[in-house]
Each structure stands twice: as C-alpha cells, then as structure tokens.
Length: 468
Image (tube, rainbow, N blue to C red):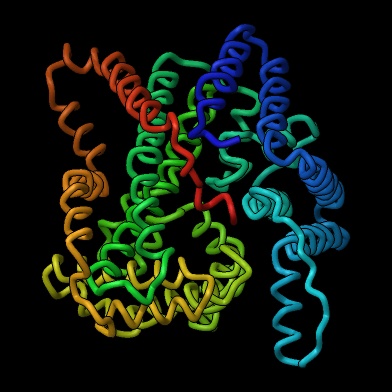
C-alpha cells in the first residue's frame, strides 16, 4: 500500500485514526498501531511480513543480550552476530545477484544468479534496527524489554517502507509517553497534505515527462529535450522523496510521534557538502555516526574514510554499477571541495556557487537514473552536444509551454517557502496567529482535494525510494 492511493487516503487512514482516537489507552494504541502497520506492509507483499517479524525479533534478542553482558567481553559477541545476520539478510536479497553476475564476468564462469524479489523497505528497516543495536552497545539507549514495543518501533507504517530512518533514541520516550494534542493533529494533517500535493501534483507530473524524455528511444532525443528530461527528473526525485518524508512526519504527528526532518531545502545548497547535509538527512547521519566516525572521521585516513562512506552510500541505493558510480561521483566532488574548491566557492558570488551545485546535482541524477550504463553514456553525449538536433520539434515547444506555469511553481517550492511563511506569521497580529491552526487545516483540505482529483484515473504513481 502507498500513501498516495485512494485506498489509503479514504479507507485505511480514516479507520486507523478513528480506532486510535477511540480509546485513550497506551497499550491499546500501541497494539493497534502495530497491527495496522503490519497490515499496511502486508497489503502488497504479504510473503515478506514473516521476514520483517523474524528480523526484528533477532535484533530485539541481540539488544537484550548486549544489555545483559554490558561491561564484559561477551557484550561484543551479540553485536557482531547482529551485524553479520542483518547484513547477510540484506546482502542475500539485494546484492547476491549483482555479485554473481560480476563474478561470472570476471572469471568467465556461468553460475546462475539468484533472482530474489526485493522486500519493500528492507534497506530502511535494516539500518533502523542496526542503529538501535549499535546504540544499545554504546550505552546511548537502554534495551527495550517489550518485543511488542520494539516491533512497533520497527514497523510503524509511517516510515517503514521509505524512511526517514528513525533512530530508537528519537522516539523511545514517545513509545511509552506520547500525548495527543490538537496542535499536533492540525500540524500533522497539514504536513501530510503538503507531502501528498508534492507527490501527486508535482512528482507524478514530472515523472510522466521523465518517462517520455529519458525512458524512451535516446537516438531521436535532441539536446534541449535531454536537458529538459534531466531537469524533470531533478524535480521528480526531490518532490517524490521529500513528499513521502512530509507525509511520514505528518502521519507521525497525528498520533503523537515527532520524527526528525529528512530534508532541508537541498536545492538551495551552494556546495556538494552542504547539499548532503540537507538531502536524506537520516541516511547521511547514519553513515556519519556508524561508519565515518568509527573509521576515524577527519582525524585518521579521512579521504579513504570518505570514499568508503560514499561507496557504501551508492551501494545502499541499489545493486548496480550506476549507483556505485553515483556514490563515487559525490565522494570525489566532496573531496575536491575539501582540497581547494570550497575556498573558491566561498569567495565567488553565491549565485555562481549555486549554479555549480545545481549542475553537479543534475549530472549526478543522470548517473542515478540509468541502470544501463550504455544508455547513461549515450545520454551524457546528448547532454554535451553530440546530438543531431538542438531543438527537436514543435511538439517539444508545445510541451514546454504547456508546463511552464507548473514548472515555475515547482521551482518556487524548492525554495524555503514554508519557513518564510512562518516568519511572516510570527510577525503578524496575535488575532491572525490564533486562526493559523484552523487555516492550515482548511489549506490541507484544499490540497487533499486537488491531489485526489489528480489521483483519480491515474495509473502512473510510483514512489522512487520504494525500490531501495
């Protein structure tokens, strides 16, 4: 099941909220959320619910064992066991086929590559439970004694299948002591509807254009169409993933959970390092806290550590060479900035440093989009002038003009419009400020209506990060 579907919006979510608000009992609400989360996850692929429960139970037991042996040499054994088991499960389903294919290519063998279907969200919940076990080992959190509560933490449908990667420490208190406030419900509804609007009215529209200009026959693609196509993908992936994160955060607030932000207007960044402090924040902080810093961070073999992190970041996104190239591209760019480029970027006008970042982002998204590296290189050739046409046809002109107002709106919404609005509201008269919670709900309903009207009858509705 996906958030941006009529089934979720008008059946699953209303039932969940009505039953949740029906009885103000902590145990009842935890059980209800767990059951509804498992139903949500099992809706499309019920076969993988067993893997989720099995994996979470193993991590729960490992956490208890680390707690039991804390302060002794035996505490490290369950930590190592947990890491090996989790990475083995993830590797089996996500990377085994890629590994066998490349071994065959190198050795000339003809082993049959396994073809496991990828369980939805496995990368997200594996990292989520690993962060819990690692935090228990470091003494930053206490092991959860209730498997029901731990399963709730792992399976919360708000963020289970596409993040953000929620740390146990961030919501441990709210598992036991969350409260329902009118302001939270209002803010949650508004945030969810904003995310839904991003997904349906911007990401999906951009996605259809991406399919036309990047997913078709590249031999007839013009220079202008190629740049338009990657611009559309740049818009699609941002609003698709940030929209999902908004919906997850909004759903959490409706029931008393406060998840951390996952995006901070990354397209306003002026360097690669700044961009990755703003994009998919939960993944970036995971690699920083559990890989980069333990390897030595900036103090020991900093450049090697940097490339290890970015190699793993690329692999996390998918078992394909294009993701490895994408990760190493960003690692190399950040290294160049650290060596000398950052000093230049801070001295030149911000407009030019911003143009540099957007150009780098778009080049990176070409690497990210094309799993077929031959198509990737063909697309790069067109982008940099090796095309038979500059401006292909009147049809492209028509498409560009028809989508011009929508494109301007999408570009404006990449800017921090929400913080700017809040700043204006804080300066407004007190009477106006008191009406904001009600106005935000009305605004959310309008966005819900617009999104629903566009959702009806549409079949193009993917979430890009579901495949990771």
